[in-house]
Image (cartoon, rainbow, N blue to C red; front, side):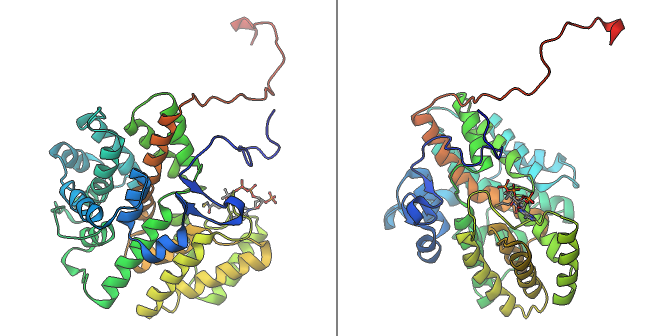
Length: 377
Ligand SMILES: CC(C)(COP(=O)(O)OP(=O)(O)OC[C@H]1O[C@@H](n2cnc3c(N)ncnc32)[C@H](O)[C@@H]1OP(=O)(O)O)[C@@H](O)C(=O)NCCC(=O)NCCS
């Protein structure tokens, strides 16, 4: 029997112990920990460990984990050669998908090099590979990815901005903190489309890289991860609050879909939005921005007043990333870096109690009919 709404809306498609998006009204939790507590008190590396290894690390475990991640940053020459050959006008999400697939050929999954090892490797290889490709094609520069940085957030910003990035300045610290919070918020979200794609692939007993490649391809679309890029393009269309009001009313009149708003599971609020919005606001103030944040708030107001639609995580992530100096095309790849942790947690969980995922369809095609000879068609 097909679901009334389509798109498997409201269908319980399996069990998970990794994340709840609102179990008994408790809101978003990763392995029982509130997203608010994690965003406030933990770092992305602690959350990555929680998702990949199943528990929060203690102090020595976290130190060791950070060191391990640092040691995994090197790019194999086969990867740098590949990155140099990928055309400059490629969408960065296609770079992520290709790098993931390529790594699967040179560091394939084995009993020793298992899902957890691959997750750790990709967590640090993804930013290095993405920014190597970015600088190579934009500036003709082969960057050294072995820079000193104590966190994934700092690593990304240092590779992106190079020597110009002042990690110890007040603004630099705020940017690193924003990136860290954002990586935590993006890390996991139950049976979203890309995670489900990874589980479908895993359930056929395929390998980790194949499942992750499927997930990246699924995340790319603007109804899922690509919404943060589309949201930025929307915000940048307006140069003032008044402009935003007029433009948005026109769009809604045209029944346009507004990226960064609405959600399949949440009905009145996305709990992650207020957290990233606070970061965007702090950066806006620190940078004396008079347009981007004000326009974003105006869009939010119009969407609520006119449609009772609320911003999802992607909407204020867009301005937060923009304030960190991140080019719009790199927004969704950042989502990949973070969500790799959640995807791998689900791949491991799927394997622990595997069953092929193969639903049935309600048939709505023609009734059986006689075969038509080619001359009669
Ligand atoms: C996320 C999303 C795909 C969820 O969609 P869904 O559960 O399938 O809900 P629907 O698309 O059926 O939306 C229900 C109604 O709200 C409207 N709606 C939902 N999101 C909207 C949006 N962002 N802008 C304008 N209208 C929207 C739909 O047009 C539909 O209206 P209708 O009943 O008059 O046809 C949808 O809200 C959307 O497309 N949002 C924009 C993309 C986005 O931000 N994605 C990131 C998600 S985290």
